[in-house]
Image (cartoon, rainbow, N blue to C red; front, side, top):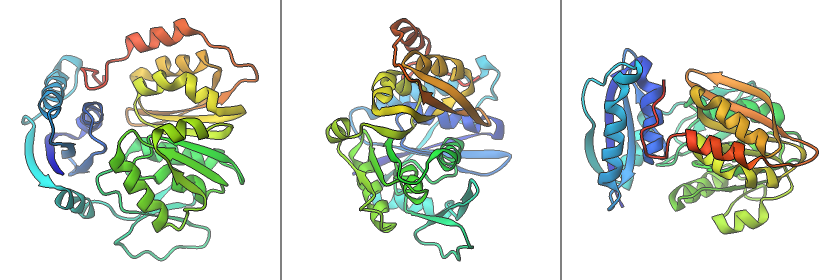
Length: 314
């Protein structure tokens, strides 16, 4: 498959907003390099959908100035690459990374001498989102470390590289069920699960199988985007046992209240908000009696920007 590698040059304080725009446009992940001036890179498959996605992304980025964000230095630049070329680019930026108190994400090509008590997650992300470097992933892993207990049944929605599933297994989950809307991340996640010798604990499933099997969960994690969390809120709540935990991220600060209220509308009561830069991670707990406020869900869905549209991080 051919990929369009997208690059945008921006000021450091606009990097998170650009990253969010990339994710909304459909990029599975982003790479950041530089300090004062940051290069944000992502990729989209070359298909009939490429041009409208790029047009929506450029329109999104062009409006930054209207919302007090630094204007971009240049417009989007493109480079076309095959699978192998794009995947290899990660290796320049992905180094061992400490997350939470005990977890270390180690690239498969790097040597690392673990210290006593450290839990190692060995990853080759390829073209899937999830190295642990982005705030949304870091916040989710911190929440998992605090909430997953030995023997838990965990579900991972939008697994990407499989990083959250592998972390949950390392933290003591007895079974982790994961899925992703795209086939490529599912394949990469399965490879990473096998690399960590966790095939008996982590199952990366096709979406229809996940829908039928990912139930009675103690913890559900979804590092996706606010719109999708709101859309899936009723089904997420239905997957969780009474008193169980939902960890949701990929949410920018401006959408915090909308997503929190939408989760509360399906019986997922707010317990904690974790924050880094413009990103938030919501930790919610399933209430004893599940009641759904459909009007609150509808309000949240109406006020959130459409996926791939012009939702601006302010």
